[in-house]
Amino acid sequence: MLNAITKAGFLISLAGNSDKEALRKLRSQTLFCPCCKTPVLLKAGSIKIPHFAHLKNASCSASSEPESEYHLLGKKELFKLLISHGYDAMLEAYIPEIRQRADILVRTDSQILAIEFQCSTVSEAVFQKRTNAYIQQDILPVWVLADKNVKALQKNEYSLSTFQWLFLSGPSNKAAIQTFCPHRKQLYALSQFIPYTKRKTIALKSLLPPEALITHSFRQNIRGLLPYLPQWRAYRSSWPAKRVFSSNAKDPLLNSLYINHISPSYLPVEVGVPVKEMYLFETPSVEWQTWLFLDVFFGKPQGALISLKECNHAISSRIKQGYIQMRNLPLIEASGFKSVIENYILFLMNSGYLHRIRKGKFRLVEPFCIAQTAEQWHEMEKDFYFKHQDHFQKKS
Ligand SMILES: [Zn+2]
Image (cartoon, rainbow, N blue to C red; front, side, top):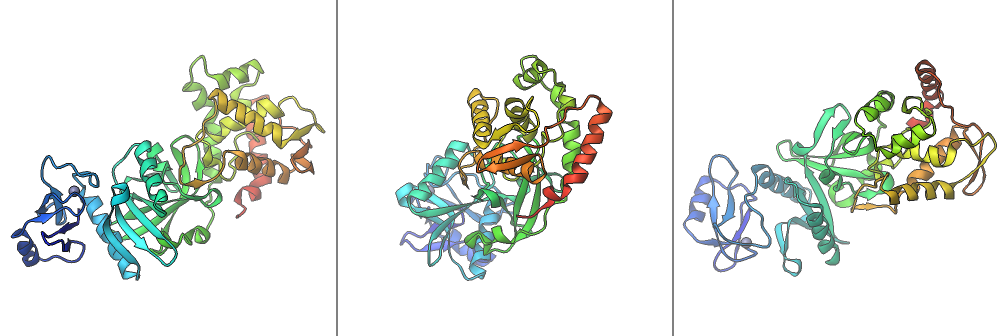
């Protein structure tokens, strides 16, 4: 930690510039943890930045040690960044009611925010408990991920663990993960998520101004849509082979396809398209769209009626069976999966497959086609993305 108190209760902070002489003076007195009040040691070696550490065997509800250099530096730099932008910020603020120490507490005219710069992985239960505790105290938790832990696979493609997905926050149509790099002193937002699998996702990484942490205004300011279609199409084309290769004999999705005499390779190209907010599902979009195809669209002739209600019911049943999983996203303001299904139906409507009769009721104008050969599938795929590319690249 970067704060300690003297015997008389005065706060000593290492957040500012501490030269050797100042550190030498500090060493000559006994200092205490501001939370548990036990003595702490000043550590000013050559590896980590100067910081305080509890004595061995101390148990402190507010602190988990050892703290990594990246975490210490991150707190310090984030704090300095906020102060330099005129914010009323407090480093390592202990909140006795909940026995939690926020990395940084910020007071604005309208609210109090707790900024947590997270480098180590904690369990979902701990993440949730800390989040809830802040909310109970009317404090808005702002979780910021260590930038070095975000693994880029290639340009605009990332691998995110279940833990890292927890950091996704905001309204579901403007969701973002905030990251901070203490070396570059730079905040970033990952947004526009288009996941292929549970972990892998296309996403846009953009720079954030420091005030974005407090005002969340960046959610309106993230500009520039990803040119993601080539990546998506490559993934979708290779999905059947990979899926079959990695499955076992009891695989419910593949079995359902075989029962209906559909080869995964010849699934309609309309199944497995990227739609807005689809990150809400942990199950890849090809899979939930396959279930929707099998349960609702398959075998229906041109002119047949389709309702949003039956689509939602189909998905809901498959979730209950455990064949489709939702992501655990405690910071996202969304209710279930319905907005994603609506976005898929909207796409089908805008691209001429469905005609809306009235609210929630549609007529099937163009049934999906199952290919007969691999060549035919690739032909259909090319035509489909040529015809509908504008729908995928549309803003908002
Ligand atoms: Zn302590």
